[in-house]
Image (cartoon, rainbow, N blue to C red; front, side):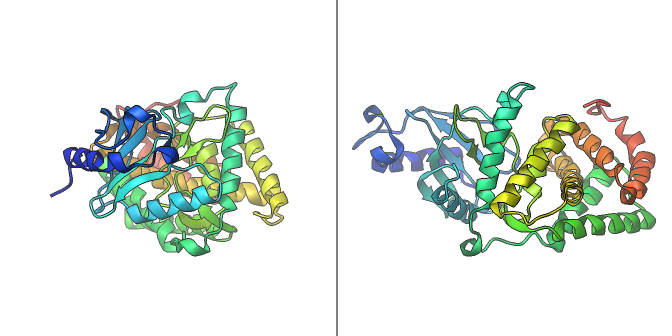
Length: 353
């Protein structure tokens, strides 16, 4: 039987008196022999199966219920320690029970980067986020034994589009000819990804997984699915965020500014602007095709229907970027002929996200 929040609460109560006061700067009234854990508040969940509870301590900690049957808890534990050791701000772990999937971790703050972004603030906030990304990409990966973002993994992700988005969400079953076309297109996107230099890839580096910190670098969360893969993956995840859109002029300027700094630091070998932007654009296409499938699955399988409201922006990214390249023409023509009429009938559709 899955562990419950009540079992987590009982576990936190047993751990609380033994926490290090100095490590977590807990005020004395929240600590000491016989002290009971303070009150807590359930927080909104994420796309996974984890549940979070904010403790009313000073500073606050989070109790986390992370089912070991579905969540890579050992990877999270290893990565949060590794990234912190190399200067990336991730949650410190106060206590853990891997067998039951119970964590007591540092609460990096209540405000996500998305909540602070606007036309005026974005330049400074993205400068911090991009600096943090460069720092993360400089972290050594040899000791982590992370999986490679190889062709099989890239294809399995895009196949979610064929499995969940087209047939199950829209009711369109791809024909054999459709599947051959998609195979050709997906292969080109994979080839572009696999020719890029490889680094540590967070795999979901965007404004909902970065915690706003006043006057400092953002906190980084939700990195437990990290891999070693293409250098542009996290960059395009941030700059073509599924939850907020910026002008293409800004996106290109930010992307190339990052590329130039990465080349100066030796993270990226010397590469032309045209080639880098093609890597960036096509990596974004792979990601957004995957996300169409994931958001459909989150609604249909996991009953997290709010993600449907984010589909119009992801669709717009997919079509707009694919149209820039001759190789994307066949995919765009098919999408607009077969899927777009069905999409336009959906209650979540918005023609100008």
